[in-house]
Length: 431
Picture 1: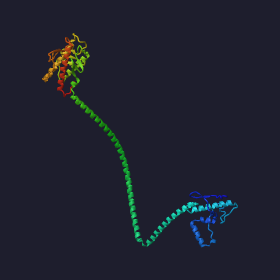
Picture 2: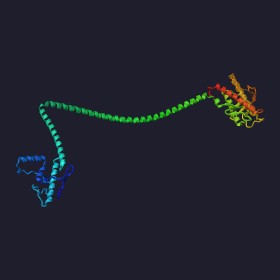
Picture 3: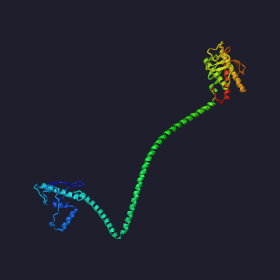
Picture 4: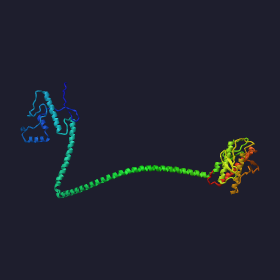
C-alpha cells in the first residue's frame, strides 16, 4: 500500500499547528484574487456596477502580485499571465504565491491573521458572534435614543434653551472670574507660605541654638546642684562633728588618767616604778611630760599664773623653771633608783606639788565646795583614810612609797580636771 505524501507550506497563525489546505484553493484564479484584494467599499461598488451593467462588458481591476511574472513599467500588465516552459515547479511556486497573497489580503482586510485551523476558526467565530451581539445591543440602544430625541424634537423650546445657554455662559464667566481670583489668592498664599517657611527655618536655627545653650546651662546647673548637695552634706557632717566636739570634753579626751594596782597612769604611761615592775625611765619621763602639760592647761583655762614657778611642758624632757633664780628643775631622769639622787629631780617634783597646791587654793576661792581627795603639803601627800603621808622625793624613799605618792598626785590632778570640765563644758577648750 503506497502512502500519499502531502507537503505542508502553511501553519495556523494562532496555535502554529501545520495546515493542510483545501484543494479548491489551488484552483483560485487571478481575477478572483484581484477582486478579493479590493477594499470592501470598492467591492461593494463593483457589485453594484455588476448588477447595473452586462456581465460580458465588466472586467474587475486587480493588481498582479509580485513574482517572476510581475508586470513592470516597460511591460505593463495586459490582463494575461505568462506561463513559462518550466513545467510543474513554476506552477507549484505560482500556486504557493497566490495562496500567500490570498492570506495576506484576508489579514489586511480584517483584524485576524490568516490562515487559521478549524478549532481556532470556531473559537474566532464564537468570539465574533459575541462581539456581534454586543454591537447589535449597542445599535439598538442608540437607535432607541435617536427615536426618543426625534420624538421630543418638536417639544423643545429654543428660546428657553437659548436663555438657559446664556445663563450657563454667564455662570461660566462668573466661575472663571472666581477661579482667577482664587488663583490669585492661591499665589498670595504660596508667597505667604514661602515667607513662613523661611521664618520657620530661622526659628528652627534659633531653637537649635537655644537648645544647645539650654543643654549647656542645664549641665552647669546639674553640676552646681551636685556641688551644692556635696557641700550641704559636708556642712551637715561638719555640723554634726562640731556638735559632737562641743559635747566632747577636750581635757578628758586629751588626758586620760586611771590606775592599775599601785601605778597611776596618764595616757597609758605609768608614773612610778616598783621592784617587781621596773618601769623604763623613758615611760616615766613621758608620763611626767603629760602631767606637766595637763596642769599647765588647767591653769591657763582658769587664767591662773603660778607663783615662784613656771611649768614648761616639753614632752619627755619637761621641766619647771624657778622664777627666783631662773634655774631649770628637770622632771625627767635617766638612771636607776639609788640612794644618792640628783636633787634637782626631787626639787622639780616638790615644785610641781607646790604648783598643784596653788591651783587647789585658786579653785577654792571661786568654789568653796571644791575639795581634793588627798592633802598636799611641802612635798608630801597625805591619805586621809589612813593618815599616812607619802613623799614625792626619791632620795631617802622607797620605790613603793614614791609610786604611791605619784598615784595620789595623779588622782588629785584628775579631780581638778573634772572640776574644770564641769565649769567650762560649753566653752571651747584651748590647750
